[in-house]
Length: 373
Image (cartoon, rainbow, N blue to C red):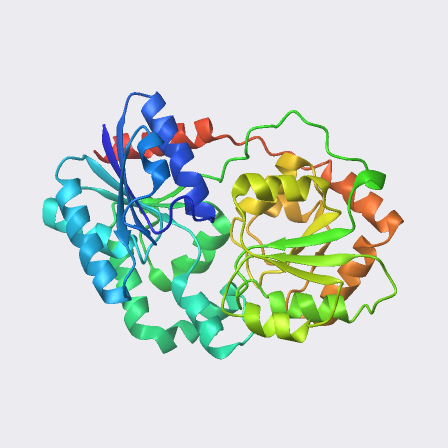
């Protein structure tokens, strides 16, 4: 089978699709399928591209409309030589993918992750609204045109792959796609490093957040919660990543040695950082299937999280908090920063059982493809 993967981001950028696409592409290749990748990018080419065993076509970002146009025509050209288009979101890659699929009569599979219009609403309003609340309160109607486009993407796609039932259950009543289109392919756990995580006494006192510094990830409330605990401790909050809220948060924490901001790092660098960190925090208003949480399990670092996550198999084993409440986040942090609380959280996380691999993901995805090609 000839598979064309359409993604919004790809290495050296970081994020879910950028991590997932090269790995799943390799799994497809290992099973004797032909693979090409098209992506938006900050550059026309990258030095890493020649080392991939598949074609990487980059569309350099200029402005939103022109990006879409060039992506569409490049996708149209590439898709003629492929049997199926596998798009890694329902907006930046999904919109051009379904229209190319319609024109060429090629099946399109959309891997649904995140939600562009919800995140846009958070960015524009600053309101702390979870994904579920956004739809149940009808706030999506304020972005009617984009909502309409997404409905068309779901209508034109042959199959919709969700990573969690959590998101599918939220989307279904509003987008009203046939349930026969829906399949589930959970995010894989990274391969084991085979290294023992450092003991409690050997770790730093860094509590790490890694991701986009934006409204969806709720970093402003996390910072307020941490600062509310005062200076009578030797912990640091390390915020790793860039985003539209970073400048204002840096200004708010100016002169505070207990808060450190770092630019985004590679996946390997993040693993190394987390492997010796005291812990990680996931404060998002909603996190559907956070890859970084799987990274924590991979490197053996404990974490606390928002209640609004799609991993129901994690929630019962971890200290969670209401992401809309600064006080509740602060209480979770305070417990995490005590030795007894930390040991309890570590012990609970040892009960998490999750064994999904990229090989599993490839087999499930290919079974979906063969069903429609």
